[in-house]
Amino acid sequence: MTSFESNESNFFERDGIHLRIWEPNIIVLPIPENRSDSSISVEIVEIKVYLINNTPNPCHLNPNQTLIPELLTSDGQVLQGQIILDEPVDELQKNIPPQSGFRIWLRQFISHLAQLLKRSETRVFDPRLIDSGLHIPFTLALRLIWQNNRLQFQVINSPRYSPIIFSLLDKSWFFDGLQLGKYQLRFIWGNVGNSESSSDPQTREIVSAVQLATQFVNLRLVEPVDHNSAIEVDGIRFETLMPERVLTLPEKKHGIKTRMELGIRITNNTPTAVRFSFFATIIPQLLGADGQLHLQGYYRRGTKRPLESDFPLVMPGENVNFFPYSFLYWRKRDQFILNIEAGDGGYWSFDALKAGVYQIRLTYNNKDKITEIYDRETMNMNLIEGIFMGIVSTPKVEFRLV
Image (cartoon, rainbow, N blue to C red):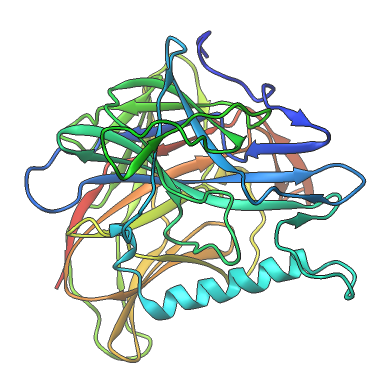
């Protein structure tokens, strides 16, 4: 870790209230292709931000305050962000199937109520009231996109999670003119200043002095290598594998499946051995040919204990391939579904697929340097250490369903 890069200890607390990015210390995004046609070329990764009340009393969020992203360059310069005041419908949300979106909306709504209504029945419901010892998680999306030949970094509410009652992030934010290199990102909690407007009448500059803030996380923007098929960070190369790029949709009969060979290759080009995790750390992302994001759902059909084989040790100069069980099948109402096993007894599911061109990528997302594994011989739980931590998003690969 360079002197510029942050660590896990530099987050702030104010009067027992914590604001925290619940992700690894490093987030790596490939720079998307700057396309001249009308389709969207975009890189997107989701993160969670937690607001935690560690005080003995409930706390109430100021309705006039919001999350404000702060982005620093490698030399410590604060980049000026902007907020869209009259925000159009997000292009990435247009392709979300209505039924799937409603199911996830309903699950999130019920989960939100279950947490927030653990109070006295006589108390008036207030979504901005956080009881002692509780937290509120929010899923945000970090997005790289080209706008007028300038690389733009955006922070938006995740297209997968519609805010149920309110959101810590009221608007989408963007930082313009980014380049290859290292940045630091954090969120601060405060007011958006009503300063002088920028040249764009739909935006307004950020001016705010606040006290409550998350830790910094390191953001790397890297150029894809090997004909845009892989990215490399600190000597570790990540690549999405898909040997067959043309797949035939299965018959419209129950029980008929089409296997999809989809995997990730990690190559260790460092001088030391590195251990990785494949236990619920490989997250798929599916886009249409026009760059629109397909809604993904995570479902659990059982529980699987982590084993040592889920955490391979890769020696210098060697690589490891991981192919989660993936398949297409038909469901009623002419819907085709793609399921991808997560490795922990759950699976990722994409609904409403049809014949056409798609893009898919796998993102490595591991938050734990140390974890417990199950030893089948002793039937005990043991610790395994030194696991590579980080969020690394691979370049997309294109395939066709026929």
